Length: 317
Image 1: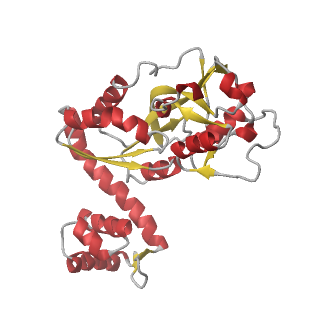
Image 2 (image 1 turned 135 degrees about the horizontal axis):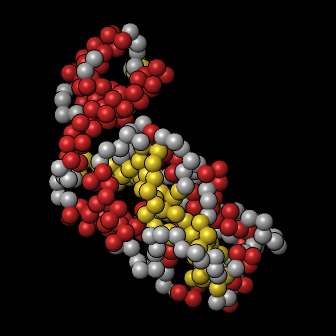
Image 3 (image 1 turned 180 degrees about the horizontal axis):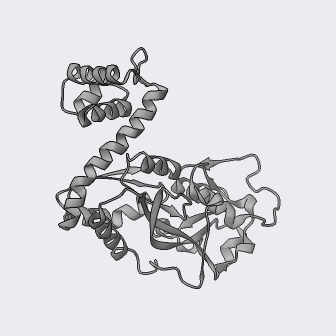
């Protein structure tokens, strides 16, 4: 068994295609196939079912691929420890970012960070919370930018900033006339929501839970979206309200529709998270510094007394 063979099975599992996997490893398909076959013969198991198109990873193969990722990551730590000791930030890094954060946070810092570290190849993927957590655990992501707290002993998180929730209200809504919104003003039947799987949806429901319900203003419309921008348009077209993270509200044209909460302001904790094997501390420190330095002045990097951090349901989403 070699690290090269482990690299090949990880590639095939990723692409579900021997040709694409070989291309990603810069080798010929026959060479990759031969090396994987040798590994299967050595282990006495079938890692991939080649009768399927796309190629299917077997049950035992999936376990072996997961372990291969761990082994490859651990081997890479030798180089990372040396780089970190020298204060170097280079190589490749893969970052996962949740959809309610990516389009608003990344433009604030990513270009500056990449310019600061020209020898670093940065791969950014927009993923939901559960996907980020899974991939941090199997070492196919280096770090994630998401909402915490996350209750998982295999993961470590560093709070980056505390982002207030805002209300985006229709001009037809009773909220439109309010200077600031109390949480008791919110009627859950008037709330436009993201689809399931988004932690922002869960937090929105948590803020609106146990509120007095009146006649459902959406009548026969039950609409959920994966896009905050789409929800805003639905509020404009229909009525009611949706909740926005502070960064998402900065480009809203009609500021009269954006309402702040009265104190204590519901807020989400945004953190950088990685698994416990993470060694690239120089990269981590530089990333944290760059993000915090480029936040709007109204975003606090420490929790303040007039904020209320909205926990994630079950503490593990």
